[in-house]
Length: 597
Figure (cartoon, helix red, strand yellow):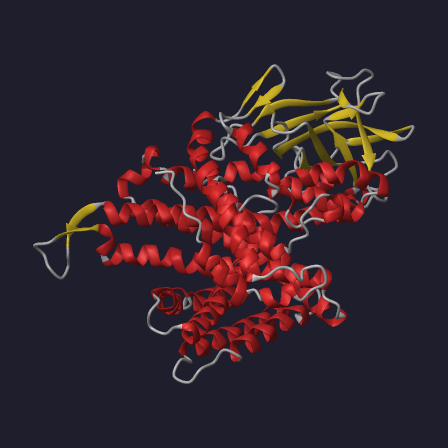
């Protein structure tokens, strides 16, 4: 039940035909990237995912992690798998070759990430957070910090973490209390952080914590937060990183899922490892700019979490298809005397196809975002860099928020396909459901993503950035129109008109609480339109390539047709939610939720 097969062909189709591999390959520094290279990378990554990581997924779930004598122990096989992972170079794909990276596009790295998340979500979280730490230090660290940390983090012999919240703060980071007291060439960090993914483990020689804390003279709120590098181990007099910093793993959280991923409560300056107490930390960039720097990590992580949500859904879908092909139950509706496997039942087909069309559409959307990151960083034309920055800004909350919400719905459907057996742990379906549940919460909940999309990305500039993306989608779809095959494109075009109408209605709302009240259906409206954009485009391209001999291309058209017949009509529901319920929700008295006795 732990088998996983990498969807190489669909990935490569999306990379080549939907995410513009040709355009990414034309960017400075990416000239050597071609379909053959990408195919080889996906195949090799698939071998690690299928043969090494996937078999450990259920092992990790059953064993979990444990804290013994202050040290975190990962499950059987984890250390060997991680050593193979980093020595094979998988941690370093998109990073600077001068620091030991491979210099590949984010487009390719994003596709490979899906393989790790599908094969073993709990394992993949370690490299996900390290990747985010690398970007923060690369963009905001000093030359000395880059020299000290980047090559080791890129290789993977050191891991990185994000230390944001505290028990009393949650997502409101303005409330954090962790302090940073200047001392000579460093700072003494004191406080406690919670929910630290891979906050401690036995996979790497060192762990580099990026910690939000306050300086003594910091202004209140988020404007007074700074970012610090706090290593688990410090160098001794000979430069060997063996001296334990005053960072204590206070406990490990007991969680609904991802049991093999250590989620730590970390105490800084508890005095366990250093007297006088205080964890040695090093300021990143300028004082009081920590939130801006942390968003570098957050945005990279948000793309990765969106890919993760779809990756786990892919794994659950494959499991559901395998079960449906083998489970004999009931009779054929067309031949009542014939007992059949459940994959022949129309409602099971519906559940499987709903998963399939969403996964393929959202896979493509995530890869489009990866390509936009590449173009925003490397395109020689300033106008193209600015356009792709707008694409990244708009698509990031959609990929993170919508993809993880739909991923959760998908793994629930996958479990449902199993019937009662899905509720039994031995099938594996339940683990995917439990693991997936965190993805809409990670790195800013869906509500936070939706507020970002409707507030910062739509209302703040009066819809100008949204109009740029809508115009791009409209032109992209228009370029794919073919005689006799316009119905999907017509539906997609009408969806864009609905979106434009809704945006104007939001901009005209008189009460600032009203847009906030309908941010979730606004996010979902964008999500369905973007998914439809990718599926319609995929179907159009598949038709040009289809000579009748390859069902892959025919299936692309059928998948897109189902999406537009079954899923796309939900736009009308979300439009009504936005237009009709904003005033009702914003006027609602919170006391209505008080229990009536």
